[in-house]
Image 1 (cartoon, rainbow, N blue to C red):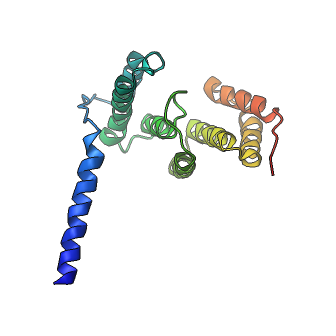
Image 2: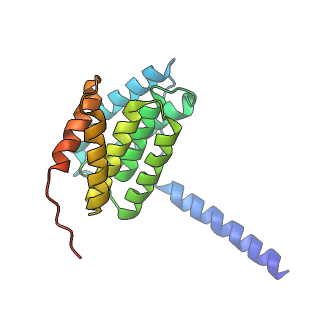
Image 3: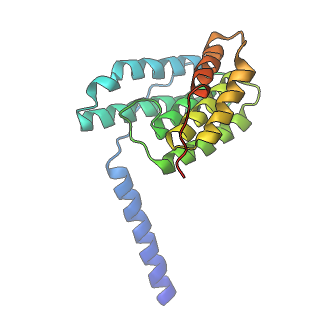
Length: 192
């Protein structure tokens, strides 16, 4: 009798937490495109049109727009899970948004940063052939370590990116290497 009571109470608590957690979220219906590339392009257009930096002071509107943008990237992952070219880029955008790397006014937390670092590790393992994923994920990890004053780890990653991709043929990846080189040249003060 007591076990059944606690089981029922636990189930009701789980339902209440789930409902409370979903109460603040709105489901966005994102139209499915014909290809992963088109779905990612749709998400990029939505991000641009949302104009997040200009509406951050209107908190409710900002949060709704940010949620909408996030769900458009999630649609790439959901609709094209086997794609190896555009879906990884959408996954990077999702992790960036969850960590608050996408926008200066986005919410940030040390716990969220460390989860993002782990998510990037998983992404690196999932797409070993994708050099953009390798470079961008490690660069974002370095930024997260830097933001959390974990300078030694950040420096290792910035140096690796600088040394590995400095002469890369892809200009986007080469730019990541150049930005990493600039961060690597900074002096960091480690407080003990």
